[in-house]
Length: 355
View 1 (cartoon, rainbow, N blue to C red):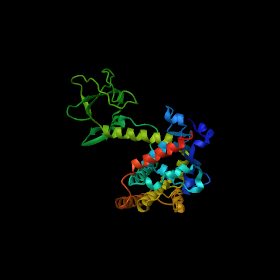
View 2: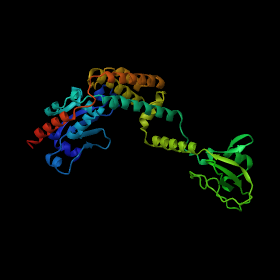
View 3: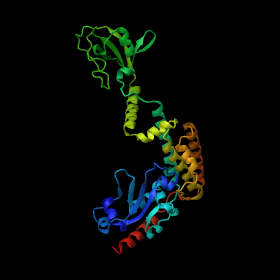
View 4: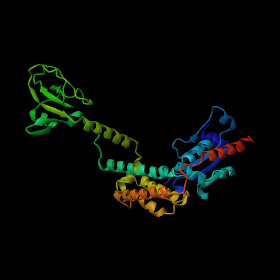
């Protein structure tokens, strides 16, 4: 089943609404139109092998959830799904009367501490990571193990590349041999006549490991080399993550991040505070308030009015307050699954009976 099939049979759409910024009240002229909804599979598909959990377009701007999947995600206190159930009336395009059987208060629980507040916390961590990437861009040219090697020099050490330059040596003519009981430490030998067939310190520029050579007995050792292998592995991980981020990042949002000069993803941080506000309202009042009453404050965040450190400090203070509120909240630890299951069965029986 596809979205096209669904639109061909609109009677299967149980709920359809404008979501995202239009629902939150934070839409700008450039904002996309996000559509979320709930659908019922044809009876033959539901009872047969053609069960479809979700329908979406290529950009995920439009997503519909099969009724059972929708209720399952509600029971897990998924923020996007709870919001869909509590959409403002002016955002609802279609709504079957049977959807009134699903009440927000039957799903809210202390699990929202993690699904709303915990998710917001991960967004703060992502904001820190983005801030680090922006402030510390990594050169495209990738370092090699040679950049993490040091040699003994006088009473201290010297970077290997500097030592090679000072000695007029080529790394390809060097040979390394293990030193017993010394981790990542080697004896370094040199073959100026290119007669001994040493493997070099690394065999190829793309090598991730040092090369070992067979050293003739009695051949003089030039110095002792130490390889900061842990540092190199950490660098490789950060290099990979940075350039994957560059490849996948949304350039429009990234340019916006740079334009306000605060070095954080302002849109992402705005949603972080929206989620924190909603988590506090759930714990304190037991409600889902999709349309945000503090629109101007959220748009100020999006415009980059506040500094990064200030926002992180505010977010951490709110998270601490949310933890206390949930500890004191009368909400159940989790929704009543038997009750939810009974309601879902009743809805299906009614919806499929005339089909």
